[in-house]
Picture 1 (cartoon, rainbow, N blue to C red):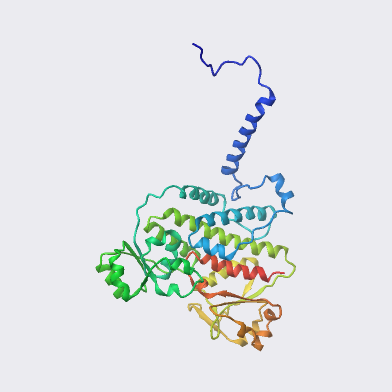
Picture 2 (cartoon, rainbow, N blue to C red):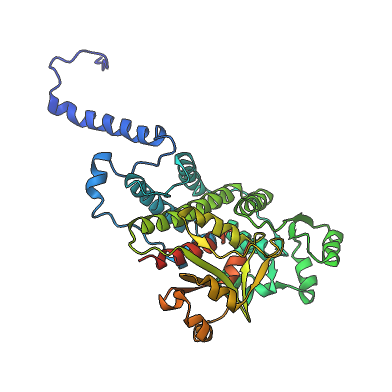
Length: 395
């Protein structure tokens, strides 16, 4: 009987041409795992070989994030999250090779973790279904990102009024509103978990407790760290830890990408404004104070040597401080960013506003106040709006 001896010395030596395919395969495997695990300290995943990076700079297009896509991703489109994250990652490598001051990234380990979580997310979900009742806007918005609408019994009625954060297509998938008229119907749905806040109506909380519904109180935290912590708490409570970690990493990456865009444009820009004013406007002007999330986001932008109007004389324990037209004229910002929930054409026609440098330079931008006030994953969208206004002011 003939047998195959794997260790038998071949009668003829292997030629270079025969060995070449195997050597290329071995080289590819070594290079792949070296890029994945060695890294460069706080560097990034290598997308282009070092010898090609400089040559490709001229023709390498930087990705411009579409705001609508960012919002869609934040509302739970994980495939879009992965697509945007990958593009930002490539851009971050470009910024690194160009030594752009102020440019940064979330780090190699977090990038690797994000991609690893995304790979396992596609596996079959064996977790049990859970019935959820978010009593607050923040909890409802976060749940839309972490789980399916079929698990959400009802949402606060006011969430259907606007679409700055959640689109009507999303909210329409939840048939019930949280109000007294629907209380019996909601109870018949047998919620497993209800999300409340320290300011929730005591009578409502007592009713939920009598029905034997488990309660989780989510405190509104006005900081980037606090928002990410609340997302993780909700993810842990509903057994969606993987989704919540992906979402928090995506938020960090989005904010880093916004930083990088400002850093790059400021680096190549010939005319960079330095004096900014970010004001809320309804019947008059107000500026957000230290307690607000918006002010903390502005502090993050200050690393680019930008000055934001911040009256030192006001009580910083309050949420917002009134700004008179005289104060605004005296400060005379190069760029004016107005956070509001209404159109501002009439405001820009004001003669006093027309005398401002910002108006003369056509550098008045409006952003949505609902987004700025949201203590949810949409912090990434709030920062995007602020950073993009700064980016567009650079010429």
